[in-house]
Length: 341
Image 1 (cartoon, rainbow, N blue to C red):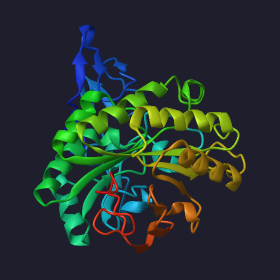
Image 2: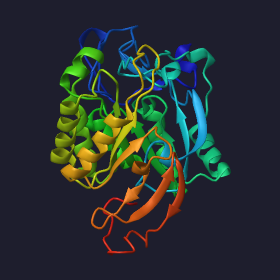
Image 3: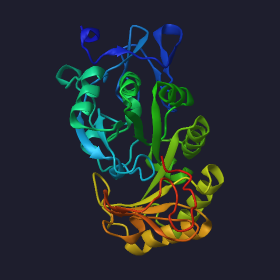
Image 4: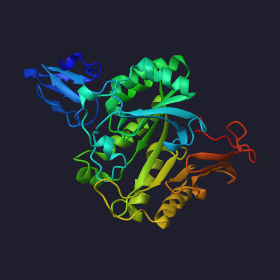
């Protein structure tokens, strides 16, 4: 039987309804799922009036990676995290860089299963300092992530998500309680972009969750992929910067990442001029830690002191080439960087 497979486990967040239907409570799509059917993400199945995850420990990709590649620039800089993923997604980005994972429904009978104990053991064997769920939307590995983070905490391994941010507040709280210490949230653009390209998802949910994560004490960094012909207009970038400042404050890092053609979207790569405009506008508006990504070797990959402009961390891509912090302080003006963990 399907329920006998190790990757098929009872889901945690759902509501039982009349007629054997269930309402999923994992992401803000809150799918109504009839018996025998799956939710939007294809990883949740209603079996006789109970909701099951089909991807518990079903691992699609696994690799030790520098934390900077996520990107996290202020969360244990220079460390590495064992990074893993499953299949599918709850959003529908036509420009998805990891479409070979996010556009594939889980295959329960052929899944590569790794126990939570096995995942933590692999991290320790590889010398990683943390555990990260990434590559595709980590929310879909929710039940598994809870168990992995709890075990990892016993060995002082940090836990983090690289997410589209479309999970429910209940899911976010449970992840925090299990030991997740940081979340990188990808804000795609404005309400129109979410409605048109992402099957009716809502921009406000992303900002709500980012703000809630900060209030819970999670380390938060935001990332914005600037896609040619979609969200690369100057007024859209300025709006996003204003929203970031008003919701998360100047101390929350904001990464602007350069788009390259992928999956079902084939415009030219984002112009360097637009990327630099985004960085400089964010900096001039008062964001302390703006960054550019996918432009290896660019000076705007580096961390500078917001007060005196001193170079504090020099990067090339995901490699740290030099670090001149004194603890968490600028060696020149002694300003303490608010968000360095």
